[in-house]
Image 1 (cartoon, helix red, strand yellow):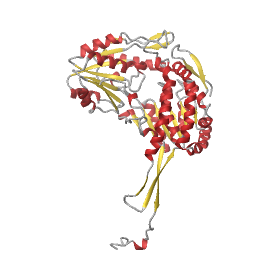
Image 2 (cartoon, helix red, strand yellow):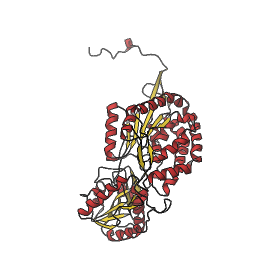
Image 3 (cartoon, helix red, strand yellow):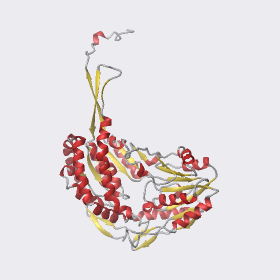
Image 4 (tube, one colour):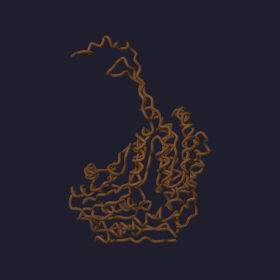
Amino acid sequence: MGKLEVINPRTGTADHAITPASRDDVAAKAAALREAQPAWEALGVGGRCGVMARWLQAVKARAADIGEADAHDTGGCHTSYLQGFITMGNIGGWLEDAPKAFAALDYDAMSPSMPSVRVQSQVVAYPLVGVISPWNAPLMLALLDAVPALFAGSSVLLKPSEVTPRVIETLFETVREVPELAAVFDYVAGPGAVGQAVIEQADTVCFTGSVPTGRKVAVACAERLIPCHLELGGKDPCIVTESADIERAATAVLRGAVYATGQVCYSVERVYVHEAIHDAFVATLVEKAGEVRLNADNPRGGHIGPFTHGPQADIVAGHIADAVAKGAKVQCGGEIEDIGGGRYLRPTVLTGVTHGMAIMQDETFGPTIPVMAYSDTDEAVRLANDTQFGLTASVIAGSAEEAEAIGRRLNAGGIFLQDTFLTFAKMRTFGTDSFGWSGHGAPRIGPESLRRFLRRKSLLTQTGEVADIRNDHHLGEGA
């Protein structure tokens, strides 16, 4: 297979290329990772932490370069330049948490049902973890799975999106500075066929991406009878109650909907506002949206970058056109702008929307804010739950107690109260499950996220007399 060109999202031109891995390439890398994994696991969590601490220092030295590569890949705003430091926080956090997670899995006790039997624990890592990561937040989402898998004692074979390969290439320059880590952590580049080849080699798979592709991954893993963990899309709602502070609500909704160009799985994609404050809320939201700037002139300035993947702009434009054709009104934004080869969309507020429109049902993944009025709380909850997805949801009310009461009725794994976009508050401390089509398998955030890569064994030792079948008087009863 020849070179595969990579588009710069800010210029619309190809300024990079990758050589897609063949199936044999993937198999060879998988074999090498498998061979190295037993020694990696044998280091124990303490030994692995020592190696990972050295990697942390290598990442620290290249943090600025990693951020530049991420920005080049995504066309992103200031957040992209923080990706090296976010990676440092990920590794450093697991340096603290991994020993505690292993200790929590350890037990050594006498059986309550058979008091003469001693039960001891052992956890065994899956030898090879396959990670298939997306083009939005390409580094962070890849390492959310890869880092805990490495701490667990697994080898990891990563397949990043072919749309955003630069940052992964830069990251692996730091990996190769730590030979013990390089032996158990590698990547393969290329399109979907390369991801399929990874699934064919892995013992368990972590995938982040769209629902259609997630289904294919799940089927492929099922055919091999291996576990998979899927982080898929969202159509996340926000409910704004009659008692809410309009300024606060509009500020939170705007950020939650357009941050990172709306290319975040837990972006606000539907807004339900009580009819008594609907018009005032929309007016305030439109005013605030008008102050949001594109970063076309300066990648480190502005608030909204270009679409990372150009074709995504067409999907967003299609959702807007469908809504307008069915009666929605665009209050601001609404037009894809081509600037210097990049494709941009200013914050787009729509009113008059219904659940018969794609923009209220399908994942849009852009800086759109469709706003719908509701009359009472029961209707708001019904509308918010009228979705196949269930990643996150937000409630902004006049009091935290009112917001919580509504939040407890919503079908989503993360419920943000009195704000939006609070996922980072969970990190490794609190785990959540995705509802509906938004995910499958164990949580990728929280204490359980390390457990995904470990299988538990029990060693049972008889410390008393061995039972003699000849003295078992229950045998033969009723004969």
